[in-house]
Structures are given as C-alpha cells and as structure tokens.
Amino acid sequence: MEAVSLNVDNQYFGAFQAENTKVEQQNHSENTSVHNSNESRIHNSAVNVSISMESIKVFLNIKSVELTQRNTSSQNSLMNIINNTEVYDFLSGKELDGGFSLKSIGYDGKPITELSVDEAKSLVSEGGFFGVEETSFRVSSFVMNIAGDNLEALEEAKKGIIQGFKQAEKMWGGTLPEISYQTQQKTLDIVDAKIAELLKTDAQKEAENPDIKE
Image (cartoon, rainbow, N blue to C red; front, side):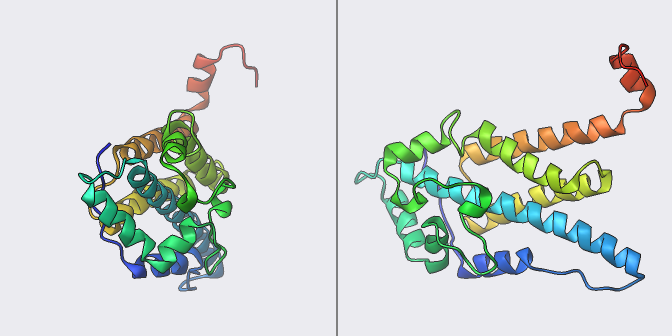
C-alpha cells in the first residue's frame, strides 16, 4: 500500500467545527429562511461526515504501511499527524468543540491512534468498519435519513459529500488513499439510486411492480 503525502493544517479542524455549528442567516421571508437553514444543515452535515471519514482513512492507510527504513515518507506523515494536536485528539477519541468525535460518527472501538498495523488493516478491509461497503452504507444512510424523500435535500446532501471529499483532498496533500475514491463513488451511487427512485413516475413504478396495487 502506498504512503499518502499529507499537508496537515490546524485550521482545517477549526473550520470543520465552525461548519458543524453554522446557522443560515435570515435574508428573506421566515419560510425561506427555514428552508435555507434546513438545506444548509443537510449540506454541512454531509460535508462533515465526508471529511471525517476521509481523514480516518488517510491515517489508517499510513498506519497500515510497514514502517521500515524505506518508508520514511510514511513515518514523516505519521509524525505530522501526531504533532497536530487537534487531529491527534480527534483520532484519539476525544470530543472536540461542538461535540464532534469518533463516537459521534458511530465508531466505538479502540482509538485510531492506538491501533496496531494489523488492526488498521482490518478496519479498512472488506467488511471492516471503515471498508468501502460499510463506510459507503453508513455515510449514505446518514445523509438520506436527514434528507428523507426530499429531492432538493438529497441533492444538497450529494453536493455536500462531493465538497467534503474535495476539501479532504486539499487538506491531506491533494491525493487520498485509493479506498477513499472507491468509497466516495459507492456512496454517490447509493444516493443517486435513491434520487432516481424518487424521480420515477407512478406509471414507471407500476410497470416495474405490476403486482403492487394502489
């Protein structure tokens, strides 16, 4: 597994926390404000969960590399994370301002920073908690539960996932582990399938399921 070049910035988690508590200002009517606020909340939540998952995958990818003398890049990257207080606290299982933590995204196992090489590999393996299937299902379920059957909300959630992924790419040096790209595509496929289902007409649904009665 290749090491990942990192460009860690303390401002990342500060901005991340700020996004998590951001409230849409009232610019028009009260109804418009509520609508915008809900879409903003959905969008920001999708951004946050996407960034958090990619950050964990970056660390697990580095941790999974056998740190021999030929892997100085991985060693340097790992030290960059360890020396970054906010990133290290998050991966250690501590709760950051705003209540964000590993537990808040559904992970209650051993802190990421305490994992062995084999444990890190296990978490990102097929069927692992941060593997492609499990993570894509968890992220898509998270945003779809917030958006419900509202098409506009689902589109906002999709935009948030894409934005969060791009921000993670930028903050982690421009390149993420391959598993991150696979997870993003799988997540978007699930959300797209939900959107496509909601866009179907009653006639299309009846044609696909002729036994279903009104």
